[in-house]
Image 1 (cartoon, rainbow, N blue to C red):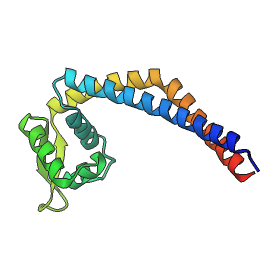
Image 2 (image 1 turned 120 degrees about the vertical axis):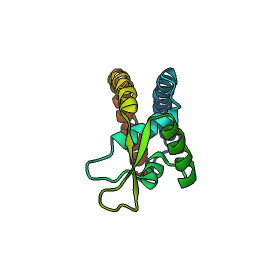
Image 3 (image 1 turned 90 degrees about the horizontal axis):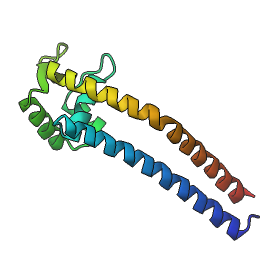
Length: 152
């Protein structure tokens, strides 16, 4: 049976590594938000453009898809799409398989913006990757240790 101290210590270690990983993720998100704002794009618009442009082949990208991918309510996604369309970033098109449905497509303007943002994001992730991977391994190790102590 593990001692109460070792169990508490294992739990504390897991919390420390989770906190560090969350900090690193937040730093990346801050980088991402800042990069979007530098090109006069709201961070949510950047995420919307990324989801529309990066949808898997054969997926009909519509408001419901965008809302799911962004974790938004339908009406919030509609507002975001409307703002983006008004800025010339998105167009609505008739779904070729069902003319009653509307799909979303990025414009050439949005593609240019997204290309630049994607390059800077990939560069940032290449720099962060070793730290993130190390943190994930520490989380996995801490969690295994905590579970092992709990089952003894």
